Amino acid sequence: MSLSLTSHNIKQVVPFFWVTNMETSLEFYIKGIGFEMTNSWLPDGKIRWCWLQLGGAALMLQEYIESRQPSVEEKQHLGKGTSINFICEDALAIYHDLLSRGLSPKEPFVGNDMWVVHLTDPDGYHVYFESNTDVPEETMYSDWVKENI
Image (cartoon, rainbow, N blue to C red):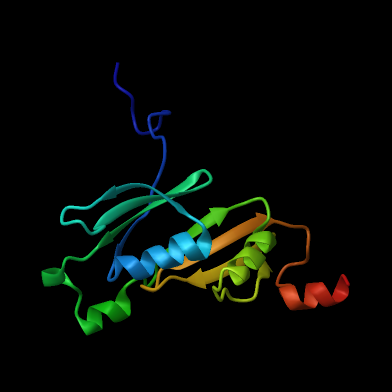
C-alpha cells in the first residue's frame, strides 16, 4: 500500500539555509537563539552541514564551499524574501531571552492576532517568533508595556 502526499505520509518540513560562514551562523542560532545541534557533517574536520533543533522545530544549515562562495552581488540577495516563522507559546518571553543573549530583535508588534518578534540572521534570512494574543492589532510592545504598568 503506497501513501500519497495528501495522507499522513509527510512528517515534518525542515528549512535548509545556505550560509556564508558556518561559525557566525552557529553563534547566531545556537548561542543567540538557543538551538541545539543534533547532527552534523564534518568532511574535513570543520562543520559544513548541520541539523539544529529547538523544541519541536528544526532547520538545516550548510556552508558554501570556498570555490562556490557567492559573489558580493549574490550575498546581497541571500535571504531576501525568505523567512521562517516559529509559532510558540510566548513570543514576548522569547524576545526577552533573545535580548539577554545579546541579539537585537526588532520591537515586537501585534499582527494577525499574534505577537510578532522579528530578527534577521547573518545571511539575511528573516526569523520570526509568534504567539496568539488578544491585544489589539498593530499594537507596539513599548506602547503595550506603558499601558500595562
